[in-house]
Length: 251
Image (cartoon, rainbow, N blue to C red; front, side, top):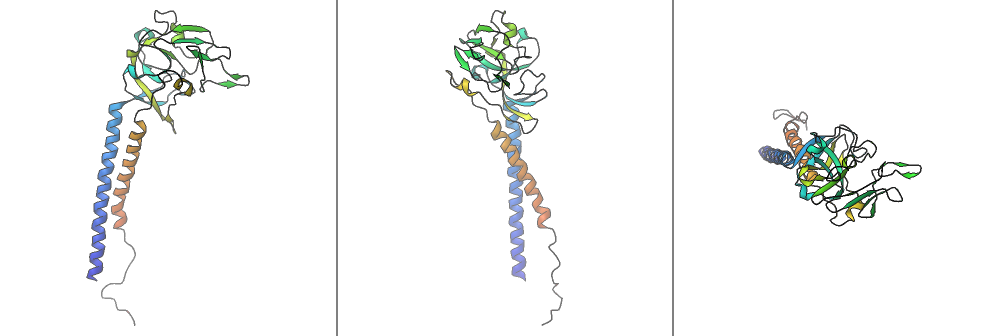
């Protein structure tokens, strides 16, 4: 009997050590993911429907804190420009310094430096994709400027509204405070895609930040904490009555 008891105690001690280790690692992953998210990202709530259907009103976003120099065509950015009012806004970058942005081409598409841009987020009707803009325009983006449009071209107040400004509707790169990487709510959320048509232009598109890695760390940490904490009650739960040491057994 002493050998059996010793064996059980050994397994119990090992289980307790592994349980404690799982909880400790879980806390490191969980807190590391949260701390990294707080440092690299800022939460943002979409105030209007100007970015629908990509971003609906009230959507909760994770926007990476970046410098304006890191912005590429196709990015959805959060920016603040006094000439556009005091509100924090979110729009898609369709042109950068030196670009000529125009609409619309013969097929109703937006063009950047004469190249037509396929925009999959625009609505499609029975007659084909909608025009990229309800009104025609041509604008040259100044150096260090960004030309911004909402994905809902009917309701969005964007660079087209400011075409008569000195910068022809562009905002300086320094106005950007963050780049939207992912939708956190409503579920299932997910990463915000960069259209392939922008990737084909010089400079390409940007890569998402470490949002997936950070969310995975938080999820894995939560699982380890819960699993490790549950081990104790499960390990000490009675497994049924055995025969006592003094109970007689018939031959």
